[in-house]
Length: 257
Ligand SMILES: Nc1ncnc2c1ncn2[C@@H]1O[C@H](COP(=O)(O)OP(=O)(O)O)[C@@H](O)[C@H]1O
Ligand SMILES: [Mg+2]
Image (cartoon, rainbow, N blue to C red; front, side, top):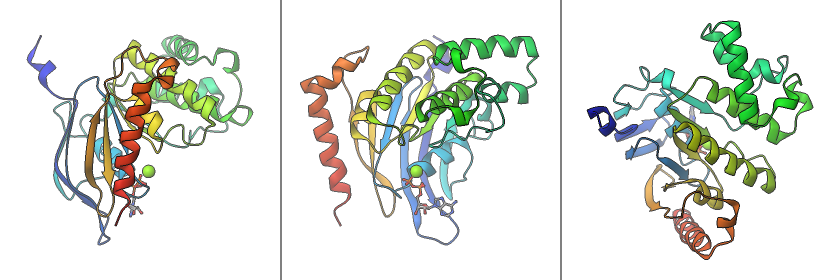
């Protein structure tokens, strides 16, 4: 193993964030994410979950403290990071294929190679038969798949996902959760996944961080020791229910004054 393998994917130390003169959004955040770890972040709305992702991506700057991604500043690590937003944010005038290929075009990948990569991604996310459709013709679940395929196209080492399935019905969400784990197993990226759903966090994560609000801070951490690979059957197990109950209880604690 080379020395590189010991560098964590993300190191956040003593980070505080305030937008302008408003109330402090995040206070003294210390967080280390290992390479290939799947970290879930959960917490009440407004506690700074999206802000943490933006800080990691270099889209927001901390007021104090340091952030390293693969040993680099977030700005220098940008090429290795993909961000999946809550809304699929697809370009309505582009087809599914063209939306997925956007990042590859921006990187000036030649057309042949681009076509091959898009074909592989369409296969991976199960969208081959709608390659030429426009976003308005797709269901919410399909749009999120396009958005995920677009994020994967640039071959990220780190995927930041901000409540990507919040708008979906439970069945589509469960299904996409399983897909995300399958993709992760194939591609070995590290993930930081923000969600409102305790069961989603438990199903996906190796570890869950619970944030408390006003100011946003880390309230508790859980390691999720469920057997791998995680299949839909795990959701019906007693261990799964037990972890969900513990995390839910802790989440309710953060809402007490
Ligand atoms: N660009 C911004 N400018 C000013 N305030 C912001 C900005 N982004 C977020 N905030 C504020 O920071 C707080 C945390 O926001 P956010 O990180 O989006 O929380 P969460 O994702 O947990 O709901 C909220 O009070 C929000 O209004
Ligand atoms: Mg948010």
